[in-house]
Length: 347
Image (cartoon, rainbow, N blue to C red; front, side, top):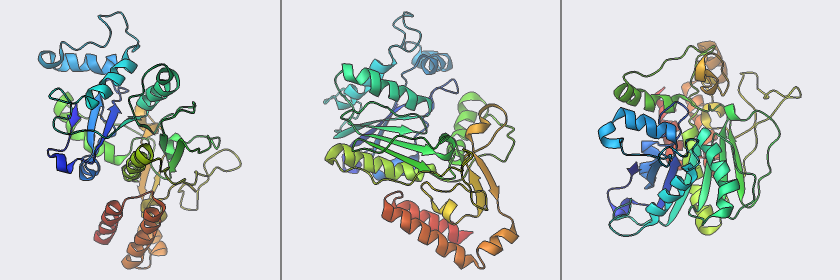
């Protein structure tokens, strides 16, 4: 799948190539976000590299997808060919002429990105496959999932939600590796659910519902941090300008995540939804199925809000200060800071 600017003038030169996630049994464009990707001028390419996703497409629309096969005619059923499929997609992106996936656009930088299970596939690709083949990606975005351990030439940027950070043990940043951890955010939070719900209803007949032990779906916008991370990764790949470092989430002496008196995680990148909170947002939850990935969202009561912010203006000012710090640090883009401020002013 290709989503690209209609006009070459709107293209920023970078292609985000996503290894689509198949954990739910179908291809999921987990890292697509219409506003953030289109406003920056990125092109986005979603690659169906794994058998599960392709089989679902074949069953969903045999007329359109029935001829697809990523198993070599049934000889390779454990996704052995997936790494080459992903490499060939990058080569097709870079191919000039009428057969280019980008049409009239010409890519300067091609980044590989993957979320969760797909980040795991990219980890294997980087550590085990890439040393044996021609390099076709300029940088790697490992989102809410594992990251390579091999020190390679291509930069690797790992961005984790609070859900994904389970231990104080973590790799050190280097000139080729960065790791950011975002307090209060979830592996699969509200914004992804809100985007997918109408699509699942349209394509599969219904969107699943879940009975979690706590109210689900953190509202901390991890995608705001990803927007900044993509810009940093592009500069890193093109000009060698490494992203800023970020403080890690903190852990208590018993090995649990350290939390403040409101229950919010300490440390990490602290967006205004955590630094100037109106609700308890965490990366933790439990219950059936995928509940553990959704995080928690519990709005504060009026008494707590009155104690934190004696007036509405105090809260708006706190949001402005928090996001100004994040913009200055490089964790947040100015456009998202402005939107956060508008949202706070309307409350």
